[in-house]
Length: 114
Length: 115
Image (cartoon, rainbow over the protein chains, first blue to last red):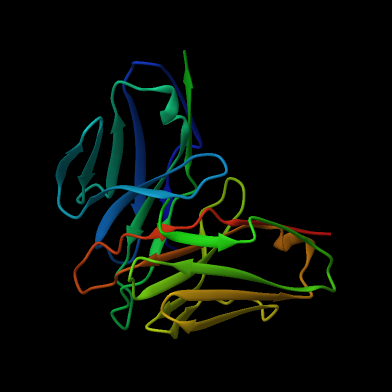
């Protein structure tokens, strides 16, 4: 079956660095995305990796290794507002060349302590 | 503000009721989605519409009936639901192009409770 695995919960201290891992097993692969969701809010797009390597966007970076079917989201200089759930999602290539399917992880709840 | 608006934000209904969820996007996107989100589980894709045509239906029970009258509006009609259908229902939209990222923009969701 197709699945994405990520830790259910991670705890870190304000000002620190935290890494959220995601491993995937899918029949095809187009790219790995990360989304952030605050309690009661909408998931919002953070980053996308289609090629191996590190993508940096301000305090957030995302890494991909396609050979290892693995990626991570790195959050630096953690702030209390970063407390949220983080989801990885794989854009799959399905039969019929569907462009629509994203396969989602169950999400990682990031708890930040002062 | 994500550009995707869902109403109502909260809904409580009995198993014999009929209700509808509404979603509207102001982003000029060509695809819209309904997802079900339950605690500690991956987002479950229910339906996808592209250019107002349904292209995905992931084995969703017939008590859920989608409608897409135009590229900006999406509805989810509910009838004779079960308590296990209680969840957060999310609408999303995206601009789907060949080789593109398919970044999805979500509404804040409708929290549904079935009694």
